[in-house]
Image 1 (cartoon, rainbow, N blue to C red):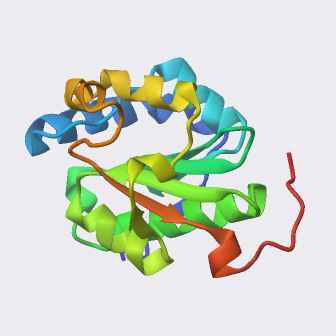
Image 2 (image 1 turned 135 degrees about the vertical axis):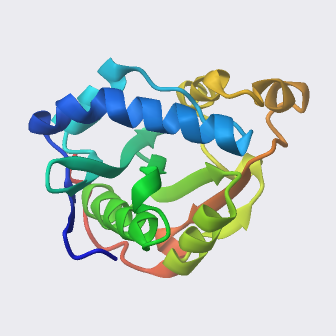
Length: 188
């Protein structure tokens, strides 16, 4: 990875990058032809204010992003919105952002099961390296708020037609009871 890139926990000072983040996510979805759940500027700003987002910067230039969200009374945590700006791709930055997001998730929610939905091979590989395993959608949170977040995806109709059993995405899960580290209490 480029040593000039900082991968840090985002805060309120990074809100100015949100329009670029959202545009980068939207453009990536169009290029890939796959779904990415849409998030509002306000939603992403809230994640930054709560210290639940990771941002990568090369000086003052946006390089990448990811955020975390808890579901099902903090029993599940998703790392979502992983994106790397085009000019920074192919340098291992997605992996660094995902690792930092994983660490933050484990610190903030040590007893939660971490999960993700992705249609991207690179993210599947990164998640697998972090200890996630493929699971059925039934093993994910049943929190309706999470599933409503999929409504912005172009593939939402597939999810609906199959009663949330199948979609284009692959579900991946990291269970701390299987992988250890379950000794801490929840911070929130």
